[in-house]
Length: 73
Picture 1: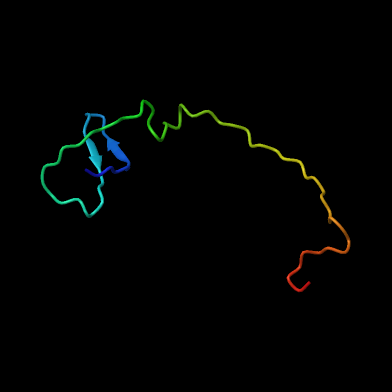
Picture 2: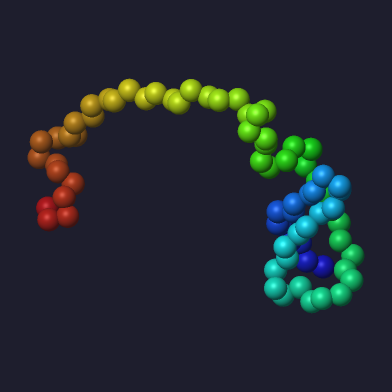
């Protein structure tokens, strides 16, 4: 038994296309399919636009004037 995690494409008529690793031999195989309720990619019209996050700058400075953390030192 071999567990494979991959992405499958489901068409509107209910057909699924799956790409498998090359080490799977051709022929009939027993498979188990687990489907998430939500698709990985949502339609653009249902995705809400978020405002970008804003981070303020915080000046840290040196720990000490004598410590520079340079390779040469």
